[in-house]
Amino acid sequence: MPDAKPLHDGLFSWPDAPSTLMGSRCLDCGEHAFPSQKSCRACSGQNMTAADLGNEGVLWTWTIQSFMPKTPYHTDETPETFKPYGVGYIELACGLKVESRLRENQAEQLKIGMPMKLEIITVRKDDEGSDLLTFQFCASEEQG
Ligand SMILES: [Zn+2]
Image 1 (cartoon, rainbow, N blue to C red):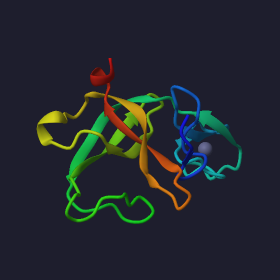
Image 2 (tube, rainbow, N blue to C red):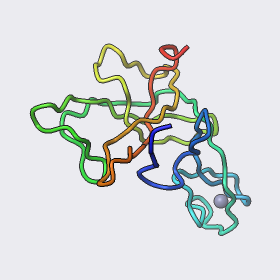
Image 3 (spheres, rainbow, N blue to C red):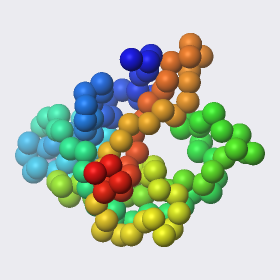
């Protein structure tokens, strides 16, 4: 297994396979949050518990991003090698909408309501040569 680590801790389960998004759930009103929160944005309660948010959802809205990602999501790409990428909101089974990079990067590949699946990708290498990982969503039929 190559040396790799998440870019940010606590966003997804790793190296579990398949990885799932890690968030939180309010024990008072049931509201979910991602990333996990210490207090509930719906009822301001402090009674939060960790919640596995799963690895599937549907595309709620999307756009094609034609600017290079900002720090800390910058990649090894240069302005010359950069390719536009999709960004969207994925509506999870719990009803929460999560902003995510998308593997698909052309308008004809994306349709509101299409089923999407979580995948873990390498953003870039760090100074020690380890792969830095983050999550994105992709059309779930592509992965079968
Ligand atoms: Zn609450």
